[in-house]
Image (cartoon, rainbow, N blue to C red; front, side):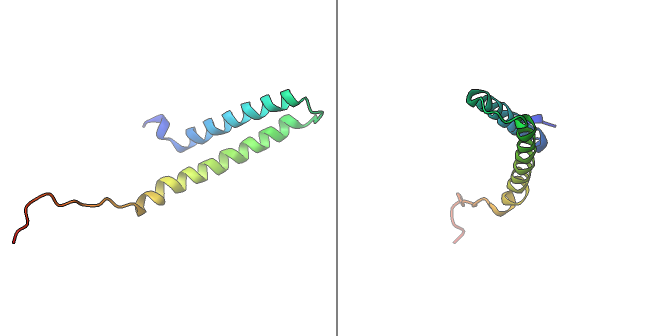
Length: 78
């Protein structure tokens, strides 16, 4: 099993990157929101869920609709 093809792992990485960037932005703004860590965690869980659902639909539903075009390279039979 290739770990980068695992949808949960990719969604987790996306949510961790979101968490780090959002935390950094809150530290730069120095807002007085005492519950910002709780809010960032809720948003990260939401991002994880949304990214997992999007990756799942992309992999299993949209992949079936794309069909390969067959190109005939042989000489015609007639």
